[in-house]
Length: 249
Image 1 (cartoon, rainbow, N blue to C red):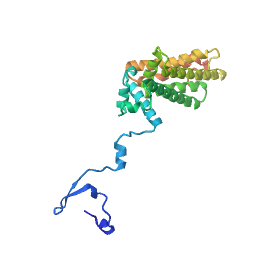
Image 2 (cartoon, one colour):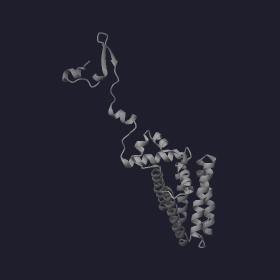
Image 3 (spheres, helix red, strand yellow):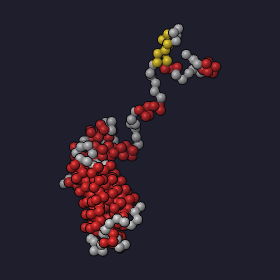
């Protein structure tokens, strides 16, 4: 059937290909669904062909999500591919093996965690405030990505020196160096105890976070670490600060 506008222009109505006459005398028509606009398909069908960098990033996100739901050591490449609606062959076009995937995950963790705590420290008013901001930013990152500590603890426990384990060790070393430098600044600014051992204080900082994370994982409640973070840092603060800075003002 042609509309009046179509009759004047001689063009066929764009929906004509969807309509098959059944009985023109009764004006009945049968709608034949044989066409989907490209715009609708783009939103309804998952993208299969992503650029290499984007596909690797999506793979990392999938692994972090799976690690929050199950033991990371039990995550297989088949499970990763299934969660991404891909074949293992498609997955291995971007990673030569499982170890390469784990290394990419540890690189992602290092980049994102260190960048996040660095931003938090940069916006703080002073060294002691920067330490607190880093503490809270670290806890928030882990609460948002509970699969990260599971993978990190798992890699550090492995006997062999895998690329992923080496990346995790490098991240912790860089984190410790940043903390020690900040603690030295705090001592120079008169905010921290002048007799404070920077290395021990940095170790205690990381250990306090790890304790909160471990207890939250054991309880199966990642919200717990957020609730208890402020109290834990208050105790840490009293241990490292000079008398005039042992409580928040």
